[in-house]
Length: 100
Image (cartoon, rainbow, N blue to C red):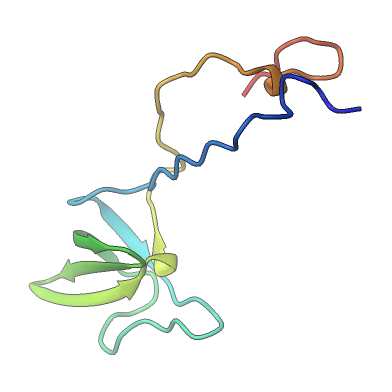
């Protein structure tokens, strides 16, 4: 039986990018059809200068490239976001809040 507090709960999707405009990131090709543009080597450190859905403009040494966002490897592992109060479905079987 499911938790009654979770039956009508909507999944909250809050996609937080791990990088912002101006951040220095690393780039790598993504297998399956997203190679890096010519002249941009794998592992290059680049600065994010523009973002559009699915793509980033990056620059290095005065040159610009468009890369698929999946090719961008952030230098930090995560971004802290405001803490939200736990919802009923954030509780384990024992009823204790699950730590995140």
